[in-house]
Image (cartoon, rainbow, N blue to C red; front, side, top):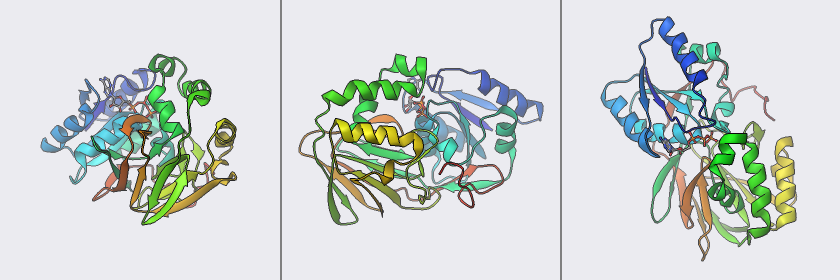
Length: 301
Ligand SMILES: Nc1ncnc2c1ncn2[C@@H]1O[C@H](COP(=O)(O)OP(=O)(O)OP(=O)(O)O)[C@@H](O)[C@H]1O
């Protein structure tokens, strides 16, 4: 088992990582730990693990680390495992990955898989695989502006504080969003693979991250009041039901604006508009607990 660990993810607490690894080793599993040294390194390490014949590659970090690891292993026969050590850990919530040590170790050694079908976003300067979502507009502006020290100190609450700081400064320019050839105007857009957003909060209960295609949530209204209302609706999983919010499905998405508007992918800054989004060529298989998380599961709705 190859474990790719991002030592900068979340609050940099490695206690859980070592507890899971101790548990695996105690059960006779041989573990090779690869530590990331810079952003993007997880992709290189995953490619090395594939070349070395890894059958399971475990991403120990948050959604960004998982996306980079998947980027290096997509197209191989290796399975993906997750040890959630990030700040929001949205993908782990999405797939019902346990957060407790023994259950985590059991999941990593179980034969159960669920497909994870990533997306790929392209801007003028980069191409990036993502596993959970891409945002354009205000949420991406907050991600670009986030104070990393604050994020390490208070975790997810840093996004609330940064949102309140950035709200009066953000001009909410109109984005032009094209979804499979139809054009819409929105102040902010979230293009997601999964049902969840910002943690264990439901954005679109009908999303299927195990299949191709995307859920598109468009926030037609900009401005402080609309953004605050969306922020307050999120913990109650009511964001997509607000007036001025529309939900769509699609496969080929582009977002543009004459001025540069921030983009985020899986909670990390990912450049500026224009951006195009489409499915990755193939899925990876994620080690999950026995029950299929997308059938008869209303845990987070
Ligand atoms: N050694 C490193 N030094 C600096 N940055 C790194 C290093 N290793 C990985 N990274 C970058 O850290 C970014 C953030 O990591 P990650 O998303 O896993 O954690 P997080 O932001 O705390 O969690 P989440 O996305 O679940 O909220 C990754 O996108 C990756 O590019």
